[in-house]
Image (cartoon, rainbow, N blue to C red; front, top):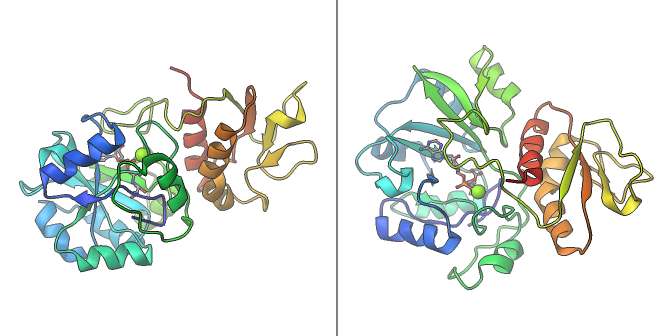
Length: 290
Ligand code: TXA
Ligand code: MG
């Protein structure tokens, strides 16, 4: 299914057998929990037992949209969906086709990104076909994803929001709605962010990162991707220089790189603001070597 972030591999979230097929198709380890997608607020009652006021405020501001909330689960949610955790991740996507699909079904859809485990997430229907054609019945083609990287995942500690994964809703926007600074506990320090592998989105070519605003020394033009366009770089992440464009193009660029023969590539990071945080998070995972 299309969403505004990336394409998802969807199954009935309340049917453990259907959910097991997701793990099988993606070759995903069972300790990596899935996001449950809903088409309307009323479905929440069936899935979660408690809604902190801050969760309410964030839903009001960002749903439908690229925000996932991790909340205490009801017994209706199979343990396989949450990898045995007592919390379930829920989001209401804003892609019109995704919303129509969800609203036409009598159950919510569990959907991880529709890529083989550990690989770059798909942002077009063709990306899904390239990698999972033999595993899925069909792909609902909703065009290229507008946001281009995954949703922001927010959990709650004593009812206070904490960011578990940077994504399509910028941290600054969340802080503005809540009226206070929010901790970001992603990646390295992450007891509460299961499944966030340091090495992820890993293309076969070695990726080196350059701090934003810097350029490589002694590196051939063919192996340098700048952030904004630069005459000496082979390509740029953001032809218009914006972090939103970099987010939208990032996975396509990584995928394209992976299809080209060649040695190491140097990529300039985004500025660490807004969607730039999520872009840099994904870049660091792509560059990470176990
Ligand atoms: O934008 C998105 O979020 C996309 C589209 C398809 O909606 N989905 C997506 O799913 O990125 P996936 O499976 O690739 O990533 C889900 C991540 C997990 O790896 C984990 O970090 C977090 O969401 N997550 C899911 N359930 C959780 C839970 N119960 N507690 C904490 N984190 C959870
Ligand atoms: Mg994924």
